[in-house]
Amino acid sequence: MQSAQQVSAPTPQQFDVAIIGAGPSGSVAASLLHQQGKRVIVIEKQHFPRFSIGESLLPCCMNVLEKAKLIDAVNQAGFQFKNGAAFNSQGRYTEFDFTDKFSVGHGTTFQVERGQFDKLLADTAAKQGVKIRYGHSVESIDLTETPRLAITDEHGLAYDIEAEFILDASGFGRVLPRLLDLEIPSSLPTRSAVFTHIEDNIDQVDLEGFNFDRDKILISVHPENKDIWYWLIPFSHGRCSVGVVGEPHLLGDLDGDLQAILQRFINEEPRLNQLLSKAKFVRECGLLQGYSANVKTLATDKFALLGNAGEFLDPVFSSGVTIAMQSADLASQCLLKQLDGQPVDWQTDYAQPLMIGVDTFRTYVEAWYDGRFQDVIFFPDADPKIKQMICSILAGYAWDETNPFVAESERRLKMIVELCRA
Image (cartoon, rainbow, N blue to C red):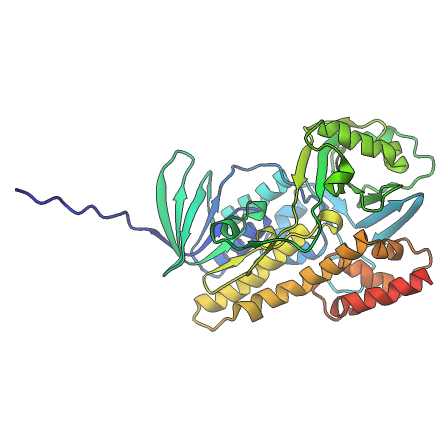
């Protein structure tokens, strides 16, 4: 009688680095690592292009795109030029010119439809030689020895990947936080955003002297409730992204007609209502709920969380993509050392440096909602040097510790708030 043959499992595919997600942080990290000769595989659940918010980039992003050799493709893509941010509240209007800032670095950037932008970054990384597999999902992870991912493609074919290190760039999908039970509640209150894209037709509107600059994101505050705010992000072809943000109980029945909710709030803000009086909705309204997130740990010697996979604060200052790209750059620097046999302390070398910028943004996000930072932004007689320092943070340079408003964010903010309220 013949003995049954032992059937061995297929040998896992071998890589130096497996990256989960082909969004901005995934593409940047893949490009940086591939350029240094590392074997990189990117696993992306969706097919590109796909819709995402986070459409108003900050100039600090351009420094990272330049380092990853992705900037030429972005510059040539025809995206809407952006040189600053404008704020509107109860008839008050103020602008921040990102070229007039404290920190050294790019002072302009772009406002982008993320479907096109993310695909452009991923396609450019692929042209550099990065391997990207679309329609593939991570089902489980084993970190007991060499990190091992169980993958399923869109046809149901299962296979395993072994990699020396895993980068989670899955954004709001938060793959590793879910699989490894890393999620913890955010310190920020639960908020929701209702948003869409519009044909804005602003060029057909009589603005009656109201300044509108397509080169800037416009942030408007609800006239009766400072906890509610709006974004208006112009694109290059006569469209805008528009959204309203607030705690769920302030926005109403979010299980109802989202377009009616968004239109009602637009109607309640006089300047925004005027700007968008001839606008037409061109896509179904979306809803993002409970988006703020945090985790128990950002990295170990086997994995690191990038961008929104680790922590997402709030969309008010467009910090999401900036944090994503900064985390990709920082993690790649650490990972290159580790893969080359050098010692890396992921808490000291990655998590702590990353959190310098995240915590700086957090200071101003929290102060926006409690009203202190709104008082600073709309203060009519701002000191030019202080405004340059604040402008640097709004431009994304939240890691520049030569800026006193980064190095001592809470103390400096408290000082300037007292001066504004005196």
